[in-house]
Amino acid sequence: MNRRQFFKWSLAFAGAAGFGALIGRFWHRRCRVWIHPMDEYRRDVSRDIAQVMSLEGLFMRGKKVLIKPNFVECHPGRPINTDPSLIAQVADACFRLGAASVAVGEAPGHRRDPWYSTYNSSLRAVLPTQVRCIDLNHGDIVKIPNRGWYTNLKDFYVAAPLAEADLVISMPKMKTHHWMGVTLSLKNLFGNLPGIVYGWPKNVLHVQGIARSIVDLALTMPPNFVVVDGIIGMEGDGPIMGTSKKMGVLVMGKDPLAVDSTTARMMGFDPRCIPYMSLAVMHLPGMLDEMNDYPAEHPRKFASKFECLETFRPWQRENFWK
Amino acid sequence: MNRENIWKTNWLKLVELRLPDGGFPYYLDTKSAVEPTAHVILAALAGGIPTDEISDSIRWLIGRQHADGSVSCAIDFPGQGIWLTAIFALALLKSGNQPQASAAISFLIDLKSLTAKDTGQNDLDGSLLGWPWAKDTYSWVEPTAWSLLALNAAGKSDDPRAVEGRKLLLDRQIAGGGWNYGNKLVYGHDLIPFSDTTALAILALNGRVPPESIALSIKYLEDDVPGQSSPYALALESLAFRACKSSVADAALRRLEANMEMIQGERFNVVHYSLALQALGTRGIIWE
Image (cartoon, rainbow over all chains, first blue to last red; front, side, top):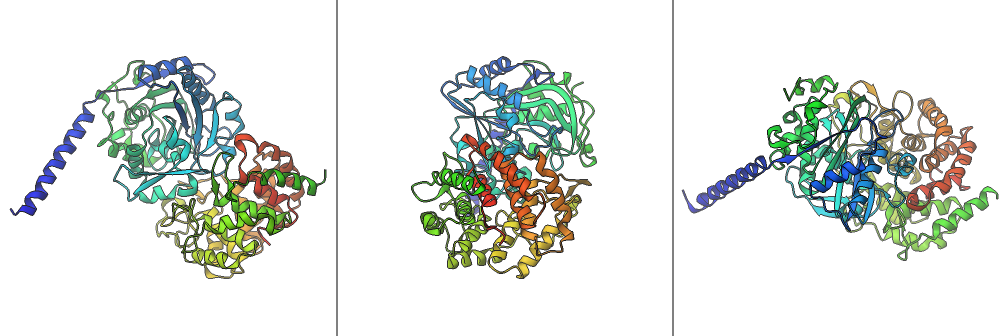
């Protein structure tokens, strides 16, 4: 073995050891996922949400908070988007914890017209006046280096208000997804990127690979907290053409993969089959059910298998919690 | 107040938003950007404002062009947001800045989207070449429509790229006549059309494809007007109705005028406001 080969193999071993240690560290870090019953949107749970955020060590005093819901398209009667009244409750929870400012920002992936997303009257009508609504698709942009390595993208171009926020709260809708099986907080990261750079849809990310792009985004700009709107979800041909499914639950936590994998199990999906979750497990904690703690209700109480496209049925199981 | 006076009042409100560098922002608290500045220039021309009154905006816009003829979402980020080149070209063509517009048109003609043999569940002709939002991605309805409008304005509507772009738009038409972002069905489900992209596709195709191929599309838009409240959608719809001489053109304009007041505060989007002024202006500047 010459010096060059020795150096190469030393590097490889060091890399493998570091990689193993990294995975080990994540696999051994326990995550908390909060399952909170909420049978209808009218119920006021902002105090409970604030309490969970506080218990999770989310320090908001004096901070700029950006709530990132999931708005895709707006068609009356279809549970496509995060419910405005729940967004208002999360905004209220942030103010309870002393946030200096709260904004709701989204860069919808299908529609350019913010009239159907952040500027929709149904959202503005329920938000406190001091909460700003921001169209993240159009406006100033900040370049940040891609901290992942699964795509060829050297940088991400992010809407400035998102890059400038101290805390980002992701609020996905509990839905099936016709390419990825399910869409939750990690998939919701696509809405951080402005359409004026990535297009409608964000085809740059599709071409790079949806799962790979999601993991790169998760490594570059993970949300600080997740609140999944699982009061009424979408099953079948989601995220647009599916039908409503009442679940009556919020799923919350600081670790996006822990929240997403738990929610996927509640929907009947094995998270190991969801392409972006199976990649994210190399980097983020919370994939294994036995490593997650459920300090409030147990997810089994709310689990109910979602109807899905035939393609994804092999990804489903009958019961994850016997 | 008659329509001309309403237009002037709105124009004065819009022009107040010009930033010291001559450009216009998307929103009140953002920096100058290509798209809003180009649309303000088009709005000025649609209302008969002399170009010397907007010369600093035109100068700012020209200063955004890269050596390859393209523009991007920000001058520091070349190659990002190249689809804006079509709207840039349109504004410079209409304001008489031929050399810069020609360079932009050449860039657009050379800009090729990805094509695909297998389009899976989408039932598309993936071999057709239109225009993408970003380099090395596929064709979509809106950038294709804007690029066709720019080529039409440049007198290049018979260019092979324009001919194929029109074919692509017709291929992406949803069964009911409308368009969304660019897929017509997924897993056997017809997708739901959008009013804004349908209006843009009609603007790009009108007069250059057999009228029957967009008759259902116009009908879809006409049916949309009574329930539509978005000023952006109403502006594009009004422009489309005027271009194809629809009988509901005036009703759409009245609805647009009534909804202009909703573009205010955090909702004040300069592109939307400028498109509304283009629709309300006396000259059909986008499609002439």
